[in-house]
Image (cartoon, rainbow, N blue to C red; front, side, top):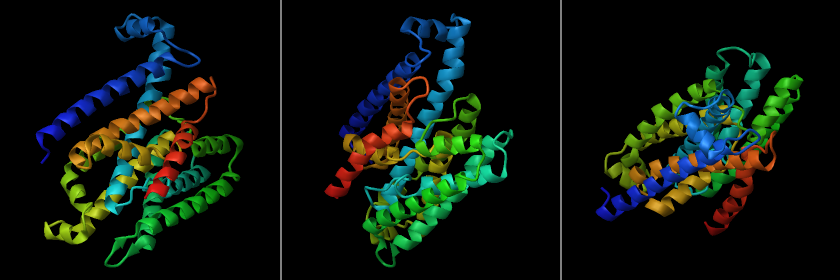
Length: 335
């Protein structure tokens, strides 16, 4: 249970994060090659916008914003779960190679199936999930030491090495694609948010809306798993079962997110750390703030990328990496 001070801090932080997210959404809508002034935005929201203003808001801006926010939330929650389960502050689905495993299966899908099919958006996350789970299983088995659990340094080293190998395999396979499909994979690997229509929102939203409440219900389990294994067993937690379930959820969230948003790393690393510093390590408060911060980070990165080089834009994954790589090195040196 959280005390009164912790509850107050959580409420203040939640309200602040929601306000910042709304501000980021407004800024994202109002900037770019085709932009809306605050008065045009307000007029459009209340249903009095012109055809141009409706097109910009509801067809160009809002779908991409929703995808960025949902994908950022998915990646952030995934990173939070992985950090808690492995007791490793450097865990992130991008750094550990889960995103790379998902990307390899995406290019395999494209090699054998058409990306123009109507079922493409709903089957692609399943292929990404298969690649992510296979990668997570390999990393977990290779870094697990019997009686001691997952060794943090070994986990990071194996994850980074496997990620490099998988990205290399993805590059090799992508050279066998035709020009259009190769361009798609190049944008995906750079972390460009390519899902910019409402169908992409509909394909990603169920994963977040279904899995996130399950993670919240497992908050007490996650609190326990951060302690020593003997303590977890002593309070009646089935460590093996819960760990496998949570890893599958973490991989599913990351795989579904990157399938639509592209190969984006470091969001799942930074958001949980910032959240812990704001509200503490208890998952009941920590997870919701992490989700909000993940949405803010990815949406801000995408907006910056569009503003710097419009209309083509710089991929959000590159912007996040520019910020996240130094932060990763700082954490590596500190821990």
